[in-house]
Amino acid sequence: MPVHNDEIAAAFDEIADLLSLSGENQFRIRAYRRAAQTLRALPDDLAARLASGFDPDRLPGIGTDLAGKIREFVATGRCKSLEALRRSVPAGLRELLALPDIGPQRARALYEALGIHDLADLRAALDQQRIRLVPHFGARLEERLKKSLEARGERSHRILWSVADGYAQGLRRFLAAIPGVAQVEVAGSYRRGRDTVGDLDLVVAARAGVDVDRALRGYDEVASVLASGRTRSSVVLRSGLQVDVRVVPPASFGAALYYFTGSKAHNIRLRTIAVARGLKVNEYGVYRGRSRIAGETEESVLAAVGLPYIAPELREDRGEFDAAAARRLPDLVTLAQIRGDLHAHTRATDGTASLEDMVAAARRAGLRYLAITDHSKYLGAVHGLDATGLSRQIDQIEALAQRTRGISVLKGIEVDVLEDGSLALPDPALARLDLVVGAVHSQFGLSRKQQTDRLLRALDRPYLSVLAHPTARLIEQRPPIDCDWRLVFRRAAERPCLLELNAQPARLDLDDVLAREAAANGVLISLASDAHRTEDFALLEGGVRQARRAWLSAAAIANTRPIGELRRLLRRTFLK
Ligand code: DGT
Ligand code: CA
Ligand code: CA
Image 1 (cartoon, helix red, strand yellow):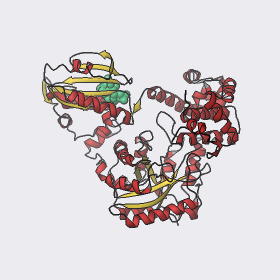
Image 2: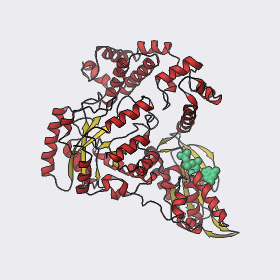
Image 3: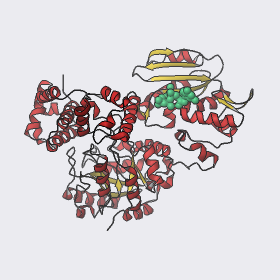
Image 4: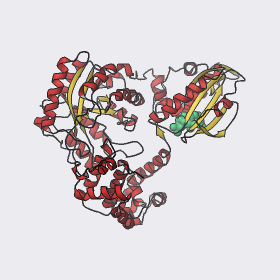
């Protein structure tokens, strides 16, 4: 069986985790982490390269020792030293590292003080309030751990919005084609634009007598049927995704769409408001006594309780009713308002397309400006640019900008924010750029204090225009870094430095809650694709969805500005 890069990378990450749990020195641990990153970023399978005589120690950050392990893994599918480590460290201890507040030191402290071996032990200790007894832990950390454990349970079977979208579109088309079906919408968390989706909820308006349930059971992706009936069906697709379908008469479509869009908390609040006005709301309409006064459209439902339209992205019971009642709902940003993109890669580092092709693709996507921000040298995962490489790219961009019409090309870099908050390239190398995008790509597990200091120090560097994907989370794969965001937001606002809302589907970072808080603290947002391929500018749409969930209007987003204004803004981010 061929061994894929991902599997070797996962083994190296596991070794790094286990080494850190056994208190091994940081240098060795980092070497494994960097090697894992390198492997994940390779465009082709290393096993195939080895077969044709390639020596893995020619890869950046991979020395003889790691090269030997790669060869062993490719040849035998195993890694003996990993197996030895697994025997010496309790298996479940590594699970603890997946929690945002727990790094190796805390995991070991829990193990030594309370004999906590795994998440189940942790859960029990939390229930018994024993965690606060461990030195340096305390009741507040206990509370946070409880929350992240709950969030984890909820998260484990959620899929990315972008993945759900593939299923949703197919289902919508299928249901819409059933004779007698008037309207179909995908509701639930999908419609609210949450970054992950638990299951899909579709609302169908159909004439009486149309058997939507039977048609659905004939959909070729259906693996099993959970519930079946005239008005509601639930099925599970082959992928494991659950789909709930509700069928209502056309006159109730708005009310049903409203009800099944949720969120639950939003619905409950709406019902309370209705009750205070002597009305009743359910999935069939709004009622005064027995008479139905609204329900055909969502607007009619809200109007019946005296409110203007509330966009689905806002329906989380996070203040939208008060804002609606005061007629102060935000004028939410739209994709059409995004004029440019401040984060994109080319083949010069880990992108797949040339500078020229990326710029042409951005123009085709309707953008008026594009910043090229390839990686700096430090990140072991890719062939990053050093000062000389960057200088050469700057020349290329200037030459290209000269002969390009219809789109402005900005000179940038995505430079690593190192552990001490310094940047991976010296200031003079950055001075010729239009913008500097800083990003954390390593040392995700630092304590809250260390991580906050790191970002605050980065924000004191003379050249820093944008902090990219600030929390460094990867949905379902890596928790956000721990940080006192309020301090970072305040510093970013006064400096100024933009904070990014990265539109990669697994990042969507800042998330909705933090992006809203950042904007409330006066921070301007860069809504960026982080494109690595020419197709990636389409990802901006998902970023806009998250921005809308964050209550952002065009004014809160830097790259809705015309190029002249944007350039002035970027110049202010350079402190000298
Ligand atoms: P998910 O599937 O976990 O990503 O999240 P949702 O929001 O799609 O939740 P889901 O699929 O359980 O239900 C879809 C919508 O139906 C939900 O957002 C609001 C509505 N709903 C479900 N259960 C209740 C309920 O008990 N009360 C009220 N008022 N609404 C509910
Ligand atoms: Ca759902
Ligand atoms: Ca559902």
